[in-house]
Image (cartoon, rainbow, N blue to C red; front, side, top):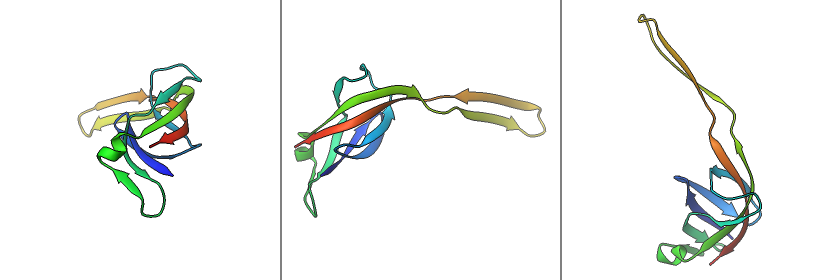
Amino acid sequence: MHAIIETGGKQFRVTSGDVLRVPKLAGDIGSEVDLGRVLAVFKGEGDVLSGSSAADARVKATIAGNDRAKKIIVFKFKRKKQYKRTQGHRQDYTEVKIGDIVV
């Protein structure tokens, strides 16, 4: 069984036991959270729950860690104008371990 969830403005395909990185969630390491909206639940071959029946479903996860991603460099320039700007960015994320998908 797997599900499509939405959290932090992004969609993820999850199954029980998966470990994935989602945008920063509030909570301590080891605490249990319910992840975002459930968009669809796939029980098996051809068994799809979506819409209002999937809205009742819950995906439970445990927070495994918080960290920041690798730095990306943003470099802007305009040729012939002597304009250059360099900026770095590190995105915060939360690593979660997917528990049960409750329908």
